[in-house]
Image (tube, rainbow, N blue to C red; front, side, top):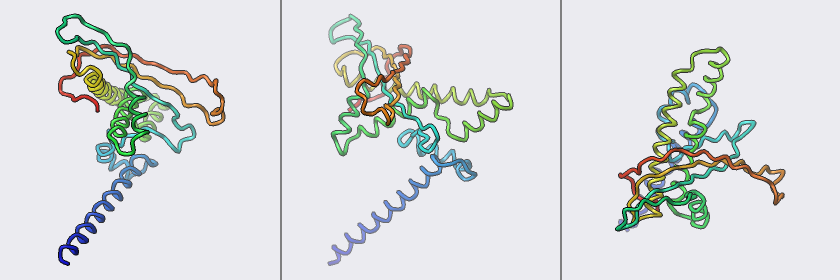
Length: 228
């Protein structure tokens, strides 16, 4: 009887802990993604650290023109086969689509988080990870022709960090596809494709323009593990 009561008590405590966590989680997400206000500004350093990169989403869902862009990451790899000194260059590998397919087929998997992390870094690299407050400051400074040096430097630093993270991600993908080879360097290309408008969703011949941005070759990162 005592053992049964102890289990019930433990379960209730766990439920309370998880309930409190989810309440705090949604408060933080609401402050980060919601309208700019004095509280969200004051807590911005805390919410940014919590949200990025796992919960990072640069989506303006309630804006007049919400973002409707599909993104992919392509990776090209230079490597050497075992017992060979010849350098080989792979074809471009789409490392995003296979993960999305597996994630859609599997209810519980690590792929959802992995995909979101890579998407967050691609957002940071392509369109910047600035939030609504930063955009408003930029607009006001541009209207007044004020100096943008500090903001430009901050955005440039964020893009550099996102680029570094994507190259690490590319190395992890290379280790997955060529586990027994000597990896030398990787190159990444990001892809942006506008989603099909709802009004044209039934048109089979709708032309979706894919915008590709290629980046330079960089040496592989040694201290990363391969993607699952």
